[in-house]
Image (cartoon, rainbow over all chains, first blue to last red):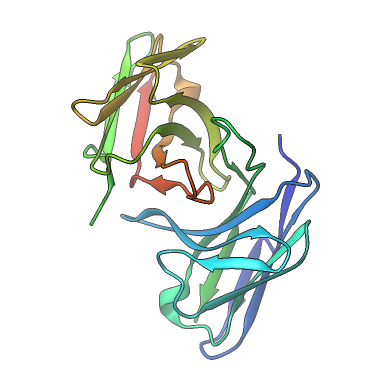
Length: 115
Length: 114
């Protein structure tokens, strides 16, 4: 299994508070991704990173920001949490090498509840 | 606009029989396809993939078939086992400047009954 950890694994917070989720990898992979999983929606990409300090938006980026200051860490921040951001958040990594290596490997997830 | 569609939210099969999970896509730029399996309270796990230059890829009990003209792929599990009960996600990517982004379907819940 790819070495990916997410912290915290569970979090309950209140509307309006900032929240930061952490993804840590030990694979030295270039690409990192944040997804959210909601019933009826599958996995939707929030933001991704293609290198240190290089990030871009996914399809559901509103209300989220990310930072990547080191290869191994990718942080997802909810600036001011809302109930609609209650979800399970997954981090994924990919080596991004030539050839059919678009395979992403996922972390265990963080369950976030915004009250 | 849903570019990857899994039209069956759920599928139930008997142990030992074949499970067939289907996926359709609309973006003709997609050239790499993957299946992930997800158990409750765990992250998705990569299962099998196929490049658009192939029409079949096999790994043990799992086979993925790709029909490019129909923009359709399917995952066959033979024989099905109770431990295969999980949500299966189909995903697709377009190589060439995509930053290796994947587009996922909404998933199909497979239940294998003993």
